[in-house]
Every structure is written in structure tokens, then in C-alpha cells.
Length: 249
Image (cartoon, rainbow, N blue to C red; front, side, top):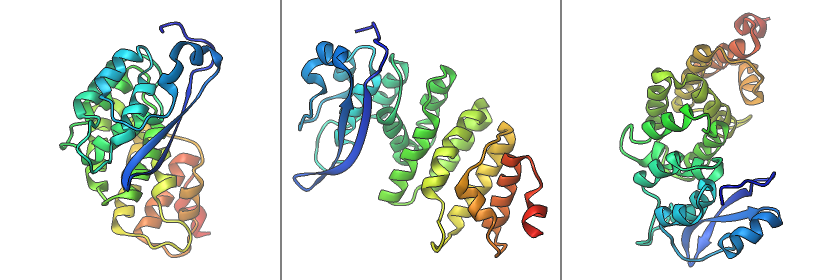
């Protein structure tokens, strides 16, 4: 189980329903090496399994355990669901982290006790194993699907950034912004403005560079709202230019 062939199993998550209940389906794409070792553990299952037990069986493969246990993450039924304690176990387990770990961490950044997921995020970041952009994408998915809890997310991410994980938090923002910002023709809200202001702060702390089309589009809008001004500030940091001057010309 500890030996790793060249290609790690790829986890693909999709949202759906099972008997009218919300479920997160997991698909595992892997070569014959893993099929031979893990066998039917990678086949679809329609019952709940505790994350702790899955980690014991899928030793060295926390992502597979996370994806399997995420099956019931948003279920309304009284089933085993990944807990904050399970997230702690996933952080200390072995193996790459991807969509499954990111989804569970995103869930607890949004819905857990205030600051509850900050510790696990920092510990995973310290190992270099935090799937930052994927975590941002999963946050965008959850924000789209449920009540808007962006304030809790910004508070948690700011706490993580102020404790030294500013580069990792910027990677999270790179995944979150494209999936959450209003596109052309969509209505912007004060929440979007707050997120953009925070993103600009973090990008400056991390001295971030690199184009983000969603930010560039907002920065180029003619109407100079506060959201647009913050987008120009962020774009200027990412491009190393004075965007306020460039877009005014």
C-alpha cells in the first residue's frame, strides 16, 4: 500500500441525489496497478462508511478515503458524515490531497465552528500538501449550492494568512475567484466587493503575479464601482502595473 506506482488514482467528484437525498458521487480513475491492489474498494458504493475506518483500509491514500466518505457530506439522512475530527485525521494521513480532502475542508471552512478548520488548513499547508486552488474551487461550489457563508470563509482565510499561510491562501483565492465572481451581465453584491478587497490584500502580502481573466474582465469595466476599483487594485498587483491609470486611459 505504501509503494506508489507512477500514476496516482485520480478522483472525480460530482453532485447528485440518491433516493431524493443529496449525495457526492466519487469516481476513481487509475491504472491496473491500483486496481490489482485496491480491487473493489474503488467501485461505487451506496452506503455510508466512516472516514476513520476508510483511512485504516486505504492506508497511505487519504484522498481516496476522503472522496469515499464525502458521499454523505450534505445528506439529510442520519448517516456517517465526515467530521471535523475526521478532517484532522486526513491532514495527518499520507498521500496526495485533491478534490475529496478539499471538499471536506471547504465544508468546515463554511459550516464548521468559527476558526475550526483553520488549524487543519495550516497544518496541511505546512507540509506542502494543501491543494489550494482545488480548495478554492470547492468553496465556490459550496457557496453556489447553499446559503452564502462567505463572511465565515473570509474570516477563516484571513486568520490563516495572518498566521503565515498568505501564499497558500492566495492559491485558494485563485481557485475561488473565477467560480464566485459575477460574470458579464450578472449582478454584483457587497459580498463580492468584500471578497475582492480581501483577495487584493492577500495578493499584496504574497507578492502574487499571474493573470486571472475573471479579475481582468472586472477591472476593465467602465463603471468604477468599489468592486471594480478593488479588481483594478488586484489586477495591478498581479500584472505589476498601475491598473488604475491603465484602465482610466
